Length: 126
Picture 1 (cartoon, rainbow, N blue to C red):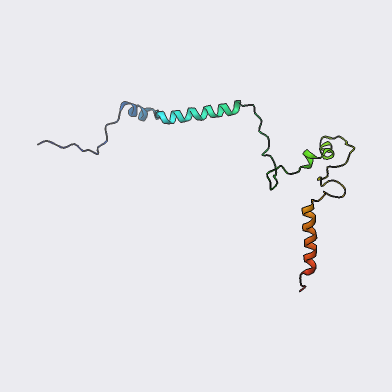
Picture 2: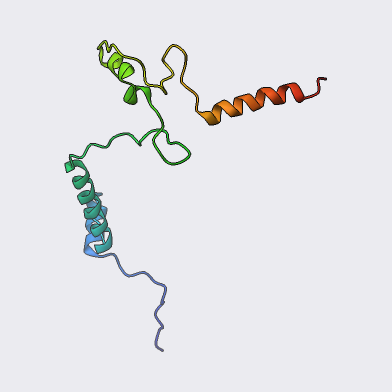
């Protein structure tokens, strides 16, 4: 009578596996995809380290219309001079909040403030 082989039986250990058991060091070969992925990562980091382009800050705060907001350290000559240790003998920028009277308000801000004062007197007191 003929015996039927077990289809789920594992093959016998190969010479490499037997050597691994003896030495305790495994030598597994990577597949081509993982090798390709590793070299791409290495190349990417090499390119990043070689680029001399210095990244500046994100651009700072923006206004509602997408313009850059006023920054006294960049836009006001007096504040910029104080930052580097120079004495600049001129007036602060009109939008600078470091000037004596405070930053000048736009017409829109001024009208809004006036409306708020008017509304304050119209509200009933508790």
